[in-house]
Image 1 (tube, one colour):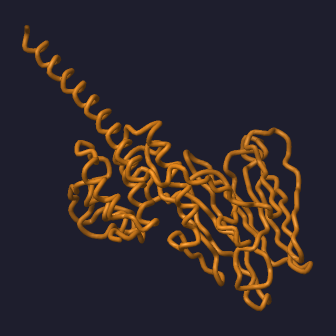
Image 2 (cartoon, rainbow, N blue to C red; image 1 turned 120 degrees about the vertical axis):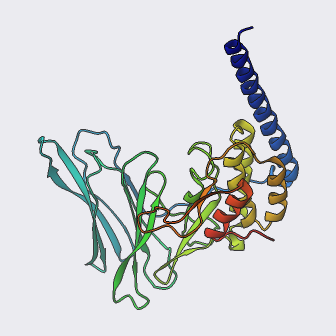
Image 3 (tube, rainbow, N blue to C red; image 1 turned 90 degrees about the horizontal axis):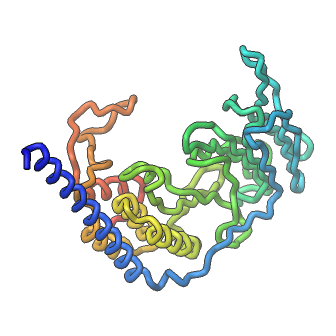
Length: 328
């Protein structure tokens, strides 16, 4: 056998061994997680309630001009209209304009941007989010365009005395325009979304699991309420789905384990999840393990030295940076 053929055979055998090892590791992880979390596998699914006045507009593909729509609840009315904009090549695009009225007076106006669609996706909703005033809130969620991206979501809310209104920036989140929902059945609406910090952190986008993130508006401020006990049933349902996804596609071990440990932290079981992670994490993958030894600059660049962490070290770092407990 020539040296070249011998080298190719060695490489092929190593690749086969890695694939077999990866598959065995994934199967072992599935079994370990299902055993550790058997009590959650029969938990009921949670259907989040949204019976608030809602507009879900824009296919992004229609050639006809979008039509004005409006919704109302009590003294609050929200109108979705469009401003026509003609591009240099004479193509016509429509920019969404949202006007909010309370007691017949205009209290806010928001305008979207050209995202390259003649009929841009936009969601509009009137719901009770903030108990600190006597008016319902208006949710405005616009699509920003781009791969896997994004909803730019705001809430228009009144002051405690109702004399003034302000626009609260909820943020940009993966996926299309968002809507709020009553997650715990108390009549108050929140935003339920994936924690975007875990996407791409240790695996590809589709290979990354994420904890459930619950965001509320309280007295005009954005508050992460994910860890509040009232949302435990929602977290249990989320974990159940996460385990089901692992059973169907569990090749990217570290992408799963990061979201799993984060979700178990919110359920008060991070110690158990951490011990499981230490046994099953992928020691070959280096995705997401490079870190800067000092804070990044304003451009997101590392002004210091790049260091290579282990997966447990990198996972602990992302958990702490995003407010997750690393010990029960």
